[in-house]
Every structure is written in C-alpha cells, then in structure tokens.
Image (cartoon, rainbow, N blue to C red; front, side, top):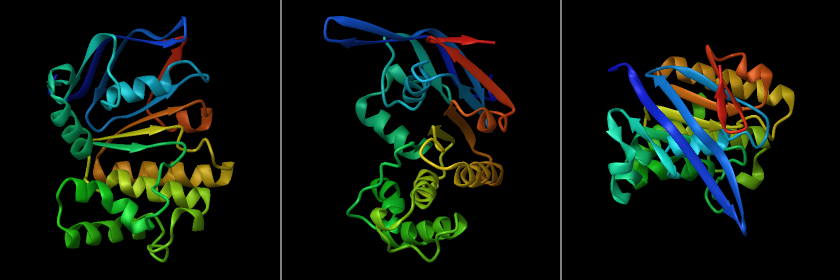
Length: 225
C-alpha cells in the first residue's frame, strides 16, 4: 500500500442541469502507483475530466472517497486542500489557462510565489523549466504572442514548478496539430522520467494512450478493464 499514491473507491458524481440530473461517474475504483504513467481513455462525456478533477481536489465526489498519499481528501479543510493542490499536484489543461496579462516566466512562477517561494528562487526555477521545455528565448512573451504548442509548454513548466508528486493532464494535445501534439507527448514523457513524477493523462487520442504502460477505459462513467 505504501507504493500507492492515489486510491479512489466507489466514486460517484452527478451534476444538476436545470431539472435534469447528469450522472457522470457511477462507482469508479482506481489505484495509482507512485511514479506511474496512467492514461484515462474514453469518448467525450465518458467522465475523464470529471475523474481528473476529483483526483486533484478541484471537485468533490457525491459518493465514495479518495486517498492521496495516505490522506483522505474529504477530511481536509479548504485551506489544507488548496495547499495540497499547490504543492503536490500540477495541472495541465487543454485550454492552457495562462493569465494573458503575465509573461511566460510570470505564469510559470505564479504557483511558486503562491507557495511563498522567494522571488529569486522562483525566477531561477522558472527560467530553468522554460529553457528545458524549449522556451528559453521566450521568457518575456505573453500568451497571445505564443503559438498553441508554446503555450502548452508554458503550462507544462508551470505544472512542474513546485516539483509535484502528481501531474494531471486533461487532453493536453487536444488543441494541437498532430506534429505539435507528438512533441508535447514526448516532452511530458521525458519530464516524467527525469523527475519520477506520477502522470495521469485524460485523452481520447489512441496514440497518446498507447504511450502509457497502464490504460484505463472509461465508458459511461464506469471503468472497463
């Protein structure tokens, strides 16, 4: 059990849409080893993003529980949950979610500054990461001055800034052409190997899923072996 980073049991999540209820997850069980690379695969609407959000503490399940590094997420206060997300989890979104008024370097350094890392240390780490992802010459560029692939590289560097135990990537190649998407996959895999970080990717891309040693299929809110 000590090698398990995440244990999810009987997760259920239902959203209310007006008078209609949409049951997105219907009793999901999942265990993720430390250092593992897991792909959550399924069609749009299968529950991939919802499951990622639950695992990262961005949302709460209606039923079931999640243990992260031995901690029951339901028992954490909002402040402790925010601290865990900031220090232990790195998020990579399909839409990048970069702040448009900040430079690439400032976007990357933001989680470190929230964690009260000194400005000097955060900047040094941010420069190192942006150089590592191939953007050493684009530090001061704002998101609108970067291509989609470059913005996703910034998002990856931002996710890595606090050396998290877990990276959650939601359709990280979904907005990219196949060539750029392939480069992003290679980069994510290389960084995961270098840092021994646990990586969970939600994708409908068969090529991306094939890179993961473990593939979990989600169909209509249920995991199929």
